[in-house]
Image (tube, rainbow, N blue to C red):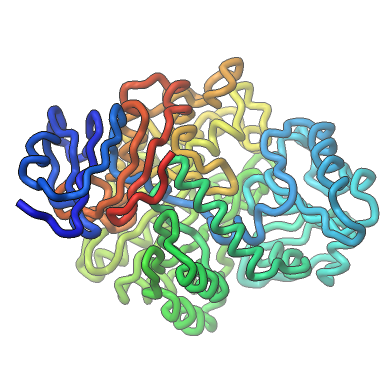
Length: 548
């Protein structure tokens, strides 16, 4: 039997994620961009004698890994510029990295840094002062790890036209100030942080595209074949179109512009803006939904908790006009547009569950039907009764294991834990409880908040601590997942949460020919070995996208 434009991919074994027995199946026939057959290599070789054969030897093939939540474009072009402070746990280490980085800068260059862990403040106020002497009289912008707030130097604030508090009537954004009205340098949430970032000298288009190419290539080398991107603007669309004129993207991107908090009078204009973006696409990128924010972060005191944190903060949502939020959600659901919604605090989560359930009931549909697929992202703090409420709904979930293992500590002296009372700080990142209750949980990184390597994420998710720091105790180890559940989070569950379960997330006939080739079976390894399991190759749309 001949086969035009067909490729037979062979390995030691396949993990199809179909729920069926994969024993004896070690080959995948691809025709065009779809899987045409799955079975034993010898049998498929006999049937398709003239097709191209790619043999991965002892490798193990899984469905292509999809990061359920990242910020690829903004991370590469604005949010993750300068020196990476990830993992720096003391002021001395942060200052040392800044000095080393600044030695390479020219006079007048902005000092840019990202990944600052607020735990370095040891429970003290988040302000710019600890870095003033190190940086001197320069424009500086240091983003906190959660990317919900930043530190700006006095010169940077001046460049942004900020000299005191500002009113952001539709959102929870804030310019933190001392009692005399002088800014502390702490700038919270997008509507405020964007004022500072807009004052930076912009990268050229060539620099932006080079950065995006680099990040996408690095992602492919970790086994990713797709990333669901949680922000978008018109410039990003233009850059992606220009990049596809140069070649194929190493991974697929599914993008979600975020809905700006508005008052009820601004709903129609915001709806029209979002609808002008939804549906745009290239060969390997598409705008597939809209991102909402219910709140900010526990670290920054801007989450929406059922009970405020110990400082009386995290007591309100990102939308000051809740009627406007509900109105915009209604218009999008009625238009069949999928949504993903950031909700870290339990009140934000429960409010959104109620709204989505009510809207789907009103239109007589189920989640994932013709009125879109809807998910909640993060869910960092949940009590027992709240878990049952969420799991009893049909809303999909997307969670980030590394946010727990890289920013929370077993001794509860991290910034996140210090914000909550002794009972609630134990209700963190309750992945096991949600899975046991029947929730569908996709897995993501939220890069550049946390590293995007899915092997690290799966290893940490099994251990509830950094896989490479055995001296650190696990954070609430009873909430750990097993490797099968974490792999499902990157494959079949991610496909469900993003409305793609009919064509993605499994190795099955008719499904997208996207897969990841591990050096060893990821489901047979201890966490420390899984974290460094070699990626032999990735296949995207039936073509080799990465090969070691």
